[in-house]
Length: 376
Image 1 (cartoon, helix red, strand yellow):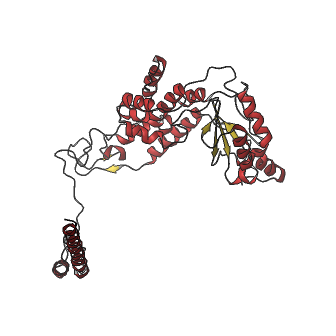
Image 2 (cartoon, helix red, strand yellow; image 1 turned 45 degrees about the horizontal axis):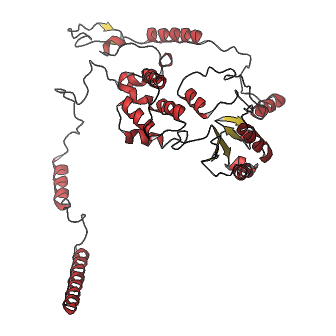
Image 3 (cartoon, one colour; image 1 turned 45 degrees about the vertical axis):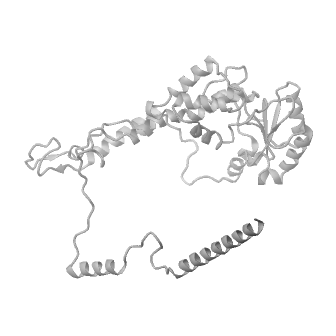
């Protein structure tokens, strides 16, 4: 069945694509996949087609990405994705027991959805919260230190229409609502954003360090952290001082403009002849702009394969007469391999195998002919 995406989804798709440079629109594929999942609850064939059309890709390219990442679901998923960590740490602490209890209670297995379409259960390899194990997430929000009974209580409340509060973070939302956020759009619901400080297990190492007076040598924890503007100002001062300290570079045959030189000394930067424009420090740009500028060569600098460009070849100086004779003798003694066999291999085994195979085929044909004659 073909899905027609809403005008709002199409408008959001255009907004997502506009975030990236015109020649890098393919980078919008990941948030676009979250966008189509926010409307259908999974990445359907229609969603793959939609992403391919708006980005000018083929469906195989989109499908390859959609099947690589586990957050993109390829079949209808429940309103709440319950993931239970069954990796080493959580497993030792009882994660597998939590998963088995939920599986039996809900009547579903891994990556299966309850009949009412509310819960999809999955076991996760790691949820990156080992100090809170065993843990489970509901639409990627954490429930820490769960046991079978508390896990069952969470899913029962979800199936009854409730929204249990995660251990850390904002109140729960559905998988479709979460996909909108993952596509890069703010969640306007009340309580969608909440402050959540670090839990005691996360702070345990800090508490022990403070208790025993452990700290980095020479580190003053009361040192104020500079703002970005202050840091940029200090960096500009340091750069100016470094430029002023650079020695001047003599020009012998001509300056950067190509005029005949007179032995005058010019600043080192001018002697390079670089046509690259000055840009701000990398941390002042977005990653997309920085990547685009890195990949785009300077228009005034010839690239090796530009028409009419001659690139000096890296060649070694000619060797002595004896060395050239020795090289020629080595080449003559090691003829290149032909298409039939690798160099140095004997053809005896190959010919023997061909002879045996031919004999076997003749024998089989003879037996078949005899049998056919007998039947006639």
